[in-house]
Image (cartoon, rainbow, N blue to C red):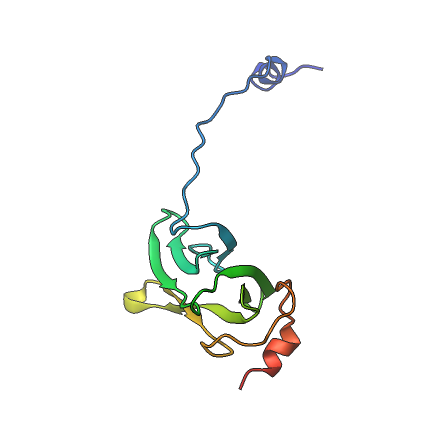
Length: 151
């Protein structure tokens, strides 16, 4: 059997490893990351921090697009995080006073002049006031209970 040298020689050559430069893109906002999410087109990300920042950012450049600072009750900190499900895009932040705030991240696509523009938004499906008294840190956000509380 004859082998073409242009195919056989590369497979017989010794292997080599080249180190690529790796630089991590810093996430916008401050504090520790509690949650990271992306919309379905993978163009916009959401970062939720322990300091109550909800930051939408470009996944391509890392530049912040929109930021919301959560208003917490006096002398209260964020003590836990729970996700209802990735599909529902609903999550809750447990507070040190035993209450919780529930949020939903949404994305609306518009097409001005035939070009897609994605607009991120945060909503409060259970209202902007903290709700429910917790006896322990928030671990999960049961979706049926969250949906039942919706008007």
